[in-house]
Image (tube, rainbow, N blue to C red; front, side, top):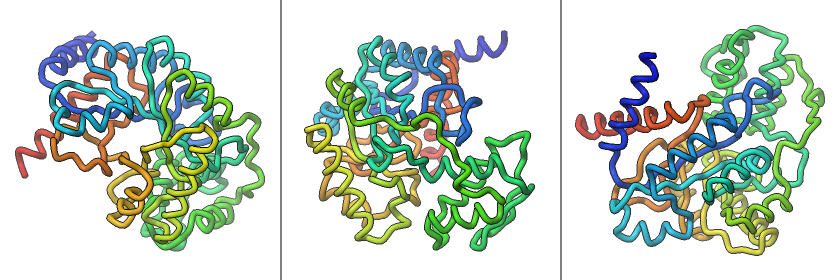
Length: 332
């Protein structure tokens, strides 16, 4: 009862105090996290809650598309509360579960694709790591370049997976393939045990159907490797080839890029210079509401939707984010 009152009050306060600006809502997977053999932390919410989010956003924001952003960036960013819906990675549930809900609500979203996984049964590196941790035959793990031992808990597998992936995302000089090999050896799980009975990612035919229905697309590289971990030449190829692939498959000229992982350490000034060669804008995974008229169009902040929050909790999360940012700006 008290929780419902808190969330209703939060919605009223959010409607009153949230600033005008560009709110880029970022989703990954839609569905039941408890049913996956891979990384449950990649699930943003289930279908019912996603539908609630879309209904709330339609009522409380002016929903925009990628095509609207250049005009918004030129002096209009504080005119309204704009909402841009984005999805990362290109999981198949974006097509099977999110797409119908978007259509029902007449909302266009932008899907950032990692092109190596389209039309491909390959399991991505983060889901491979999650599988290895989930089926580990040891209680703790420490790789050669890691600072600390991580205790693995079968009772809270999602936290164990998150802890391992958080360290993997730090550039410690090892490639993803080297990390996977070492994990297999130390967790005693051969990589060939991974069995993917159903496709994890969309096909190009699905993407074309979505495009014809008004959805937009951008790149999230070919391999979804973290850009700051790669050489300049490798970063350039990831940005260039992924764009060429999407342009060819969908017969369009994409203008937007999303940095894999997307935190402040996952891309550099050199990365941004590379992205500027091929794209008009790029999106980070840094939490925030874009309110500045001097916005960096190559480090656009987004709001991660996670933890399966429902429609009542959604404005509460936005209010918490805004108050946290406000507190930081006051105490600078």
